[in-house]
Image (tube, rainbow, N blue to C red; front, top):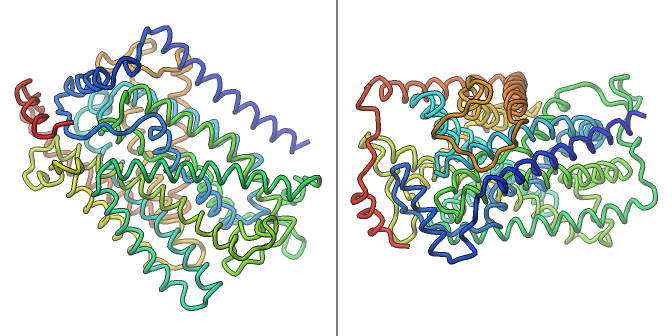
Length: 539
């Protein structure tokens, strides 16, 4: 009966995702919004540029992202294959079964509320600062800057976590096949991965967009292939009870003890729904961002909810029925028997997990360069001028890209100083990124919650809106963000201390500017100044 209750929860949450999406699409149609892409690319570009100029920003970055890129950026940041592999590896097939069956639908409902609020803000503010720009209007300029800095720290932490876990995965696989030190291989892999990601960010959004589209296509195709292989290998003996043993009945009985793996496994599941602001940071480089980015992020999260549940459940059933035997202890190793037990297939699956994680890390690092450049652009501090400088030919923030790589490397190196036992290293960067990301979104959300019922901020005119359900979704999102952040703090006290230090630094960086009074208000450049900037960065 409990299994069917879990299925019912999953189905009800899936219907809720569909209902919210349908309500937002209906309000868009009734609102009279008309896309200009069907007329000519130049007409749509002028529309996007005029919306950006309305906020006092010149169009200096190249608009090269289309509809699939708008989907691929948040989808890759969620890293279903890599994140799912880490989840099943940490939680184990037995603990993973209960979390997938019962925790996944609840987390999916929370993610629905969070993505609905993010999409609403994203469709109202088509700038690279995204929600932090909305926080300036809703809660003050100091809150907006603090939100941006918290988001920036969260992106660096999650990117460092993904790169580090991908390097460790490759190191364990190397050790299992060729011997040697897994730690040494992981260190080299981490350095190479961060260097390559930095080069892609420096190459501009053309190269980055190609990589992101390719990684998303590979992940979607491999997810479909794995679903077919797992379903065929298990047919006709699908046994959900095999992944749901009794809890906490002592050692040696086959039961699963209630330990930290459950909490960390649930946090890893929640992380699968986090895009980390990868979509909103591309607002100044996407064609028709007010429509494509919020719809792309919400759809990617909805697809991950529906497809991820089936994929992870089948993988947990397969792993429970066939004990793990790979030297690296990877959850995908048993799948090799469905591909004629080919050792090359196991290596390919390990490489797929690493590609998924590195694709997510690249998506977040690139987003952090755009956010850092946008924050520096609004600052009058001379030391930040280099971060706001756009390379004319490659249309990218060179200084912000180098800063992002160095910050991710420093965070990864710092986490390596923690004890390796008990999952402290894995939990530190993950919990830190989750807490900072949630704090960044709670600031504008608190401003939305202070509005009276039926009242909206005059500067916010969202194209994506769930209608009458938005009040409930906002309160649900705030509660979920606060609860998950508290859980992350309980899992890793070291991450809580680091998050508090970053929060204090963010508030300190925002306070002097806020205290400057009238001087803090950024004067909008004239039309002539915007045109001069745009002439130096022709499209």
